[in-house]
Length: 280
Image 1 (cartoon, rainbow, N blue to C red):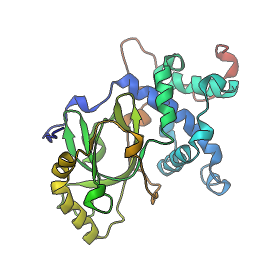
Image 2 (image 1 turned 90 degrees about the vertical axis):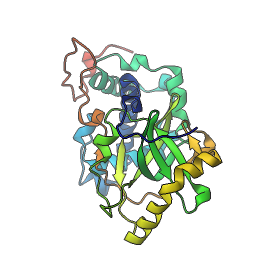
Image 3 (image 1 turned 135 degrees about the vertical axis):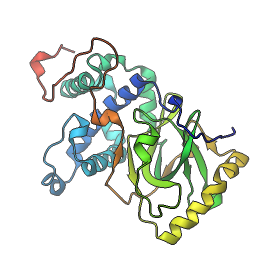
Image 4 (image 1 turned 120 degrees about the horizontal axis):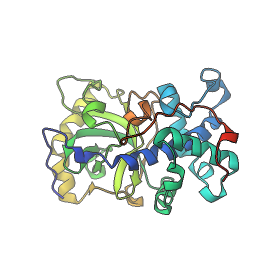
């Protein structure tokens, strides 16, 4: 495919809102379980994990997200086999994010995609180059031209301009910013797991050298057939994580009650009220 970067970000860079919220329901559910795996020394500083994702400190969110992927097979069991307590937890998160019924909206196709995350994901430092009609253009550089790849990534809620335009840069005179993040398959798209962590560990020389490579990265990847709009196991990249401080995250995390239509009422539930829920 041929990539044409646009001056203005189109609405088509976002996936349908309901799809984005379904992703956050499930990822938030996995995160509540992953918090139990956080070391006690960390929990002394962060003793509480809220099912309302935006209420948790950002560095804790990043650590918990890492635990989700590191322990994915143990956390992601068949939905039909969930203990009742976990069904209640998922139902409450669904209600808070989608105002009821989201648990019943998960299709087998969603669940099948989620199971792929253990093997198919891109986890590393990526560079944001801009947007085309089909999504954000994120470049993975690796250590050489042979490792380069371009990913066309949909955002879930906030636009790229909202998320990244004011991101810190090692050199303010250079256009591109780099981030640690996780890319995942979702339906026919590539999405981000919701957090962009500014990567500032390059020396000025390293940053400039990589920045210069970006000028021709798109054309090289197009020529080599290394532009991805969906992910396969051949595209999986898992590099060592260096940071846990995220600063840019989707609006779904900040505002789980954003209106999705007329007549919605705002939920305020943040506790597990078992007796008030329907039986499963």
